[in-house]
Image (cartoon, rainbow, N blue to C red):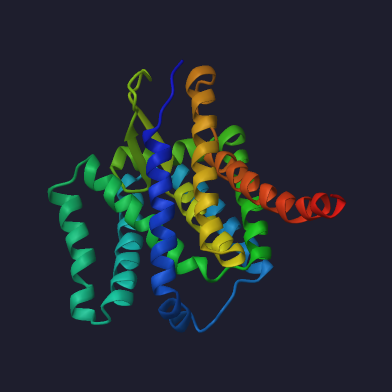
Length: 270
């Protein structure tokens, strides 16, 4: 029986870090965004745009175009978050400059994972406050549907993942299996899936409190590990990680709902 604990543990630590940093910078982010919230139409357009982007990148044969697109996007994210912490532009340009210098002159898998985690956390923190509980549910449902179609149906997500991996772009986390045993020795998780976990923990924390936010993070990591164990032993090929993440989130929220609505009835009956 093959099982792997390093990726679920990494995912758990990322979710905890995202929750803590969002709590620290929430007021600054809200002031920058002016209290805006995404509407249902905005969420639909966002998911459609993400699906189109993956499709286009899967078809583009010129790898330099893909590289330029990602490097520009990541540099902008680094600049914006550095500005959130230190609002001085001449200091803020140092973080994207450092990233680009590493990518072109001293890049390896450790830096890839580091910046992939940093980007996922930063995007989660920036966008987490724009969602409401209703738009989060819509986003989760639509994104999972698109992910399933593009992994099992069109296979565009597979082609996209292979291309960004070929370029060494921090668009995924690459973790060695631990304990060892899986033939390829590594497992992959896309940046969008990591962002989704951060968004779900932020929204759950806002609705139910910090303590239950941590419970949700632990539940997502546990269900993710359960799915991963089944996949490593019985399934060959790619599988939509959004399903694994969403099942963990629904398990935590479902248990919370049952506790709030069923337990009082039992207590009253006694």
